[in-house]
Length: 485
Image 1 (cartoon, helix red, strand yellow):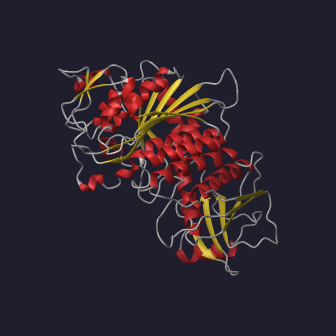
Image 2: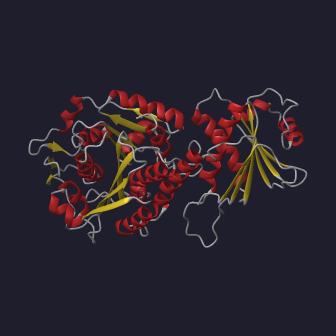
Image 3: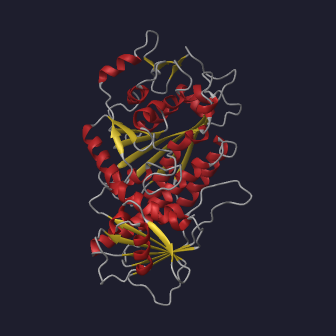
């Protein structure tokens, strides 16, 4: 939950008693006399003792206890650095303070008006997104949520609505992803989504297992039929935004596999660990929908969530099965652990039937993408070159960096089947992220489409502005991208 009280003022009230203070400075060789910086004397002594320069605060924020017992952290932002680098600096500084579980956080920003605007947006977003606590099931939780944030030095006319919306969307995505698989089953997930839809005024529609069988969504059903309870569904949410005939319709699609065993091609233990997070794509899609709603972005949005589990059972699909998807394409099953592209195939078909202006899908889809990129970037594909340029720019502006991968038609030779219209994948997974994208492209026709393979959904010790291993990557990127499409 976000800090319940946010106070934004241009100057510090002398009577204010702060216990934890964050000071953000512009790049400076030395502190000018015109700045009234909290803890300046303590900072100078600390720099002298540690034999570091003031500009070292750009990469390594520091903290110290002030004479009155207040913990103060100082960070320096170089606006010539990338947004990701700036976010990382602020995250490190905020972490120095949140480690003590403060109830309140006081933030002061310095510099020109433009610098203070940039610093305030960074600090407010980073404090909000890290001040809340992700779900844990300890008897004595390690963290307490931040309750109040006070900002001094810059006043925002909109009270940082966009930053708060992005933080709320990111926290929703991370909070859902953190839930254990025995709590977040397809049934309980659908219940949570329905309740959220009621609260936010979204239109809610479900295609349950029986309905999907009836309409011929064989690719989704093949995966879902392996579960003991037939609780899988494709959930469709609609956000209308402000009524404007010129509003574009964006379809957001998310992979929601609540647990992935690998099916008959069972994962070894080291790769099955953490597979409760395989629904992250759907959580990111939900987070984007929430952020767009709270920020009142002038678009129409259809959100499609493919919610199921990939289990092993006598009914589970298997290698060499031939499955007919909702689009009519027949699919030769090669590997049951390539279930994500199966559930997405029919979900993309449903999304495409409503003829949106753009489809974006999010999925923790392939291990080969993480092999290719690590977990600092996510990979993207598109059937439009101009969309790729917009996507890269959104990555730079949001601090959620993306890398473009090829999807040329000759790659599809690897998906040619002698007995079906298309093979699901190859057994060798060296470039499976590319083949998965080629496979999904078959189900969007010629609709403009972006596919994000979420290799950065989890990164040890946090990434960019986010301090938890679960990053919520994709929410801020999408909100930035929606401003340009």
